[in-house]
Image (cartoon, rainbow, N blue to C red; front, side, top):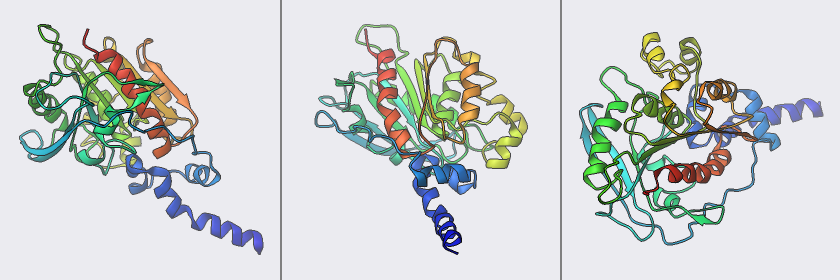
Length: 310
């Protein structure tokens, strides 16, 4: 009787544990019922616990500016936030990082555990990040790939990036011809979207970092988990990040995934398809906030190395 009661109590906590395990970036796993029981129990047993990431800014964060623009590509208003590093502000010419949110998110919560301005003020391994700006934008719930009447990829490439460049962001240093100073990163759905943008537009993207990317290896697999992730089997084939990984041959790539993440087996397949120069991190962790937060600083440092104005 006691054992049965403990079992009921333990499994009765699953609903709450799912929410805790998923975090903002893993909402799609909860919403679609994809998060497996093992991950929930791992969280209950502490298998998802990681040392707290140091997200304390080393200096007063720079300013943030939020607004909205009408996106013809998405057919709606799109919210955005632009953040500047410490000691910088509007009018400064800076490299640019685009951060893509996870499923159920928007421009206001693209990062885990901190604001865009706080992210730019971090120390990574004791060293401040080089100055760069960061922008977030609303991408909807369609996994950052084109759907009928809603094309977030075109919004990023043809609307958001030109808007940022008009502000002097994503450009090389004064007098330099190289304007390819744009990196992209994301968590979960945003991690997949980041890889997709880099694969589709290597002419625009200088480097990409994907944290716990939501990767599926077949349309049937994706549809079973989230029927709205792709509009059709043909769309999945066109936007499969694994199949098109060779397009990243000249784009520096960093991918990180926890070994208890339900997407981990698919991310391993992705890693084998990536160029040999890709930086891949596999370690303890789940599809949850602690792993996301721990991987943001090294991902930002990776992008900064490849975006630094020389």
